[in-house]
Length: 332
Ligand code: A2P
Image (tube, rainbow, N blue to C red; front, side):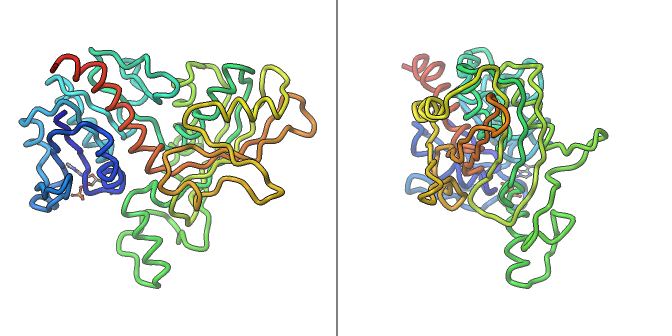
């Protein structure tokens, strides 16, 4: 498979590079902005020069993973997909387009069809939440979701990480991406605010969760918060179920669900944390407990590496399915 990695020098792109050995990549086309042209990317023991996106388009890759932000995706994803390249887009540009599947393979891989050349990878905080909510929804039904996030600075790419590191080293922050210092702080502001006073990140949690789980009317209330952490996003999630439930049954349902690891023995100090989730593929869940006043209310704590399952791993899983279903068979 000839694969273009658009945004190969960014945080998500670099994470994807370390995981590409999981795919049968025969040729890699690393892509970044003009300022990185000529830089070498090491892959499979070779040094490959970074290409411009225009050049990558001419090289006609089979699959392109885009992690270079919405503006690049808006302009170039359709140009690649029109040429028969399967584009897996990590930006928010196409996620809510009704013709574009929004895919978490464990939930809705059936939306991947040979004629859908543009596929959206959901937002990182949404992926980890729906990974846990979906199996619960199928058995118990969902009535309402309330989520508060505690999001890593790596969700803002290199600029977010650079701000945190500069602050910790007491250096001047060249181009701050947050409106306040992030170290020793916690900022209830992820992405820009909308007219309804919710942030775009909060509305991604609302709208993308509804689309992925095919629950268009599900009430979701979200508060997204940036914290000075590297390694993963955490989420405190409260859900009200349609049916009453037994906590042990629900815990074992999650234990049996692919891509989920249950860490839930708080008395033995066992619960998910970014320090545990960092560099892991799974979504971790713990602090599973029933609401004291509502038979159908459930509290959860969900943590995942936002650069892995929240971005690169989900995209690589999609690429793997596309290769197996639509490329390998055709080339054989
Ligand atoms: P570059 O490193 O040359 O700026 P992050 O979110 O970590 O900042 O990463 C963004 C990624 O998107 C980087 O690899 C960046 O490349 C890439 N990028 C930004 N603009 C473009 C563009 N116009 N064409 C291709 N890649 C781009």
